Length: 461
Image (cartoon, rainbow, N blue to C red; front, top):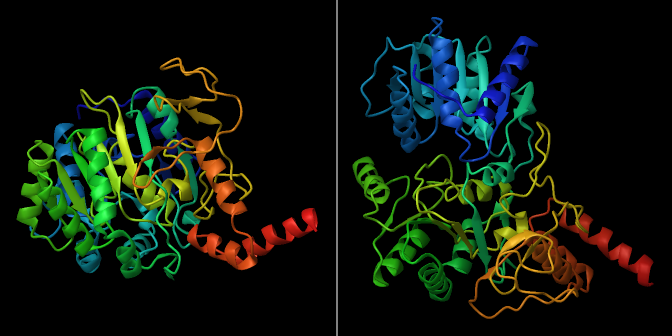
């Protein structure tokens, strides 16, 4: 097995091995998008299978099967694939599995010694949980960049312990992920949109976002900032994605819509065209939110408001992989998700029993890192008076964020904090505060609103 792990990957493997020596049989390994989780899986499975153990790598999308297979082949790990439309190799000690296929064949398969789970934050889903409980004697290793669920259920129900790799910020600083610039317009008005399963209802959200003005702004800023470079667009539903692709094509860009029902041959050809640069824009509805690895992606255009921190971080991560000639990744947030969840490289504390919103603490009990964006050149870094990039000198007093209709504003964490405070101050009545809390996706809007409202009454009478 020809394999060379990065130092931080070796460290993460070492932590997992120590956890096994301490008696753990189910371990959650946390590493950001782009940290090389498939390489970690290949190393672990290759090592275990070389000792005569049957090992599985479980994934949930067709694209992840082919992508994982290419990685395993590259490092010399012989393997089979258990999935529809793939020729099986039943004697291989390592099997890459489609989770839906495996779930239908549990009574026909030889029990594995080790199972590695890709994107294991889905482990509570029906097929996933059924497979997990069918093999209590196996060693289970879960891989995730975002070990949190929208319903707040902790992954500690499945994993005994958790080991963590480096943060997104560390990976960027050390050149393993691309630097990014995030731009955002004023967030869409989500008032009146009901919640379903903890997130915005799809149909009502699509009505808010599937508008020529929003799509037109997205295309205009894509042209201005990205110059036609490769981009992934996340949309609310299939119809929205189709409309966005049509509009990009009408503007002169090569664009393709894909969804879960697209014929597999068409999907495979579209992905090859995109990877080769023949297609500039791929629109989708959460099809490529996880595991989709094309280092040439320069931009993520987010047109789908979401209360899921996990979903949003996974989307942004698509553009953060470094590539030759890529100076920055561009995150064009037309959905207001940065205001809900913060920036991609904020320091977040993960836990096996932590709820969805976990690390930011201001007046909403969120912890905000102190960074600043230059109002002239948009350089973002730690608090400064003189911009390290362009030398612009800024006044020491707090300034208002200038916003014009349709104009993307590059965000820093200081801007987010200030914007949220101003938004909260403008909510004068208890009902206003409840509506604000609902739009931010808080689990108990009334409880939060009453806490803020009563605090005001005590302070101001």
